[in-house]
Length: 77
Image (cartoon, rainbow, N blue to C red; front, side, top):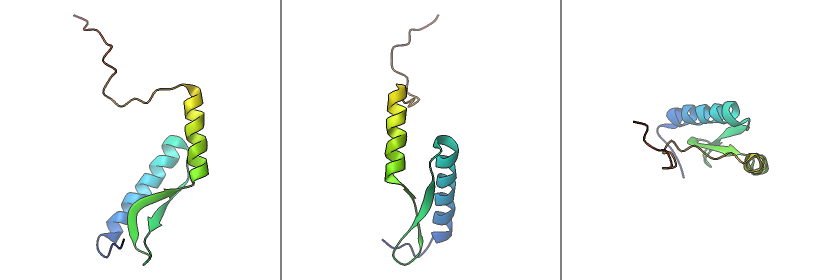
């Protein structure tokens, strides 16, 4: 996959995503580049670190908040 145009935007997008992962989850990430050295807009995360984070999250028993609610709320009128 090559990205001849838009590489500057892809670089910025990837750096923002890397920073968000670091701020939110404490995971280190780096921008991903194609074989020509152009930014792809994707990020690369150490798979072992991601797996450790997911296992730790699962052990806490937290549920992921998707913003949709679980449908169990009752109307309070």
